[in-house]
Image 1 (tube, rainbow, N blue to C red):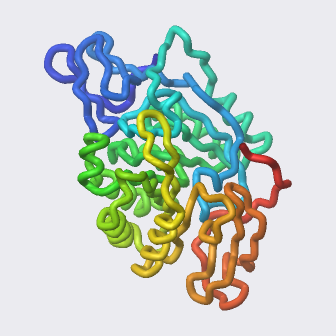
Image 2 (image 1 turned 180 degrees about the horizontal axis):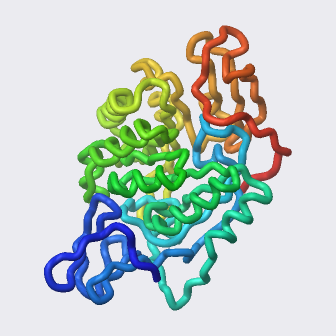
Amino acid sequence: MREALLYEKLRGTKVRCLLCERRCVVEEGGRGLCGTRVNVGGSLYTLTYGNLSAIESRPIEIKPFFHFWPGSTSLTFSSWSCNFLCPWCQNWHLSKVEPDPARAAYVPPEKVVELAARRDEGVCVSFNEPTLLFEYSLDVFRLAKERGLYCTYVSNGYMSLEALRMLRESGLDGLKIDVKGGEEEYRRYNRASADVVWRNAREAKKMGIHVEIVYLVVTGATDGEETILSVIERHLKELGPDTPLHFTRYYPAYMYSEPPTRVEKLEWCYQQARRMGVRFPYIGNVPGHPYENTYCPECGAMLIKRYGPRVVKYALAEGGKCPRCGEEIPIVGHYVRKPIARWD
């Protein structure tokens, strides 16, 4: 247990958590909605510092980051629980479990960074909501930057602005945000607000953080055409045409059993995004589909060919330019060529 960095004391022994925009008021002995912060004697403590649920090296494209250090790998780690309620969660075995300090196996930040420095180009907090590992992330990121590693988050984007600023100050380089629909879908499935997520995406980009957006097209929930078109419009308004927008295939999981997203629906999403002005839309979770490749938005040349999380061809010229027409493609970091390995 560590004392939390972002909270305020209220009357009596109550406290208000300031880590995410839920801003839970927590009674003595209680926890917030995420279950990772507990009020002990009028002070708020995190139960996740160094309490990791998973740690493994994974390709950056699997996050997905398609315009950030292509071909590289990041040491990816996670903790427990979530501040969202998605009934289709793919990682429910982690996100629906609250941390138990009595059973925790502590992993110091130095150990994570040492492991990453041996074979990876960066670190990534993922699998469950990374904001809940906030204090630990700050310490890992500071150490990682000293070793020349990049630092990334795969998040639902519901952190407070103060938390986002502190992450940036500690070294956050890349932020992938999962958008969960329009305002109605956020209220219905997560008791949350889409405005907060888009605000954080916009502010992160202003801070110089690389941002990519993923939209999980969930059958019967977030696959309405009007909703998808409104998300594309919001993406362009808040982040501009050069920010990658991924439309990802849903598969049944946890408490949601509707059929997987039709590939034709994903293709429609991609085509609408291109028509409306998104220069780099993608389809995800359909390995081998042509729309998971990067094309020059000016001349159509294939620049990066992928198969799932693997880069199988990289054709960008020096300076990140299209070799055919010279168009500059917004890619952060250079291509890291690694032996092709199997990624399950």
